[in-house]
Image (cartoon, rainbow, N blue to C red):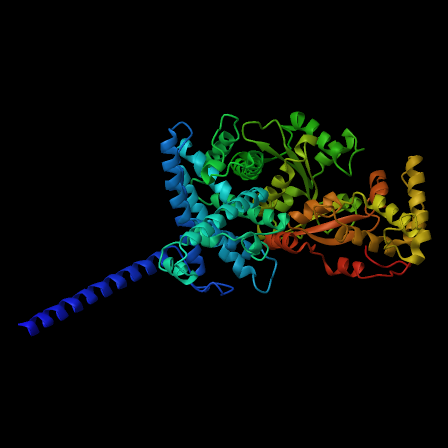
Length: 627
């Protein structure tokens, strides 16, 4: 009997051990499932996650982050409740924060990794993965935002901007405050539990589905070491957060209800900026020293970024391109004449000459307008069809073809499409960028539909602004009047350049349209070299070319095709660029690639002819270099 009892006890103990083993396996399996769902990767030493899993992983991270964000917004304690309920809500909120802290850091690490300018490690393929993640995140964001009412959207957007503030100084200040409090609480807990060593403390969280906030936060001695979570440079960090919202708003436009979600988001941001809004972000994080003004600046900056994309939605939906014709000539011609007056090259053109341009058979004047206000043009563009690529303003008239004849038989006619000006109708529209929108609509909608594949290249004859002013500055540097700068004018051409500058200034004072052409021809190669340097190398503080016309065409995807010598004999061209003009070429198949190349590398696409001009460090003084 005693032996049977031992057998029974042995069987029971084995059964219990097997049950415990099953429970451990079940918990371990559930833990692995949670880790897979939340994309917790054990190997933190790997520089990059496996390319087969990282896109799907971060998509799940973004989805779970938005789900958690919605739960936080719905459990917001509010300001009108009793203190006990507020404390209870803050405790519940703290529990939710612990399960989401690592998700925010994971997304922030992803953004910081793809924002680096290391082409070998993070190339086009890597940026394509980022776009996939942001597209999926934006789709989930739109679906989630449209399901919320305004009362819940307020804390929803507030917490989002607290996690990814446009003004990075807010995030830095908040993170410093949290690190100090969390480190103190961690030290306090370890002081009370002296019997547990460090390994047992870490083993406690080994199988959890989330990483506690105390393990994620860094103490003050390790802040500078972790460059992924905490950037010391405001410029780099601001760039990353702005890229986050730029990518988010751009991806929202591909959603069927992206326009509606953008307007809902704009409404929420405007409500958060109202003085009556008494729920700033420090309520969520328990930080009483939170700077509300910084958070308000972040709200305003985010609203400005969103307004740009809402404005693009508005333009795509309501803006149209029309043509200046006889039936609308009387009401639109005053606006057209005004646009020519504010142009950099045609400020002195009379109404008679503007009328002559309108009546030319090979020229068409296009205008941009709103559907509801067809009598109020926003921008104008002059387009000409010619038999040859013109090298001067005079040749534009000489080589003109009849527009109607070209449209009838484009496959049998050898022609070139030349765009002369694309300018806003008034000065207040310059900053609105309507001329950029008109250019895009012409290049991608009207001209391809009109000429088909025969109009895949569009040339633009453009004036150069500010070249003589910059040249005079370089001349002063060459004379030693500005010792802190270094002149690029060749030493053997300093006197000749000085004579040209004085000749142009004296002719401008006498209101004469001509200068000594022999003097200009003597310095032709040097002037073309300096002009190429001015267009390609000299930049403004924002990184764009100093010439506004060059900046306009380059940012829209054009290539600097040629520099034209003695292209315009007008007084305005003489005082601005010594009769030199530039010719840009739009390759419609690769326009976006060219624009992206300039935005990413700051290098202007040029033809071999222009590049050869720039490589002449000591150009010869004789004729024969460029047209």
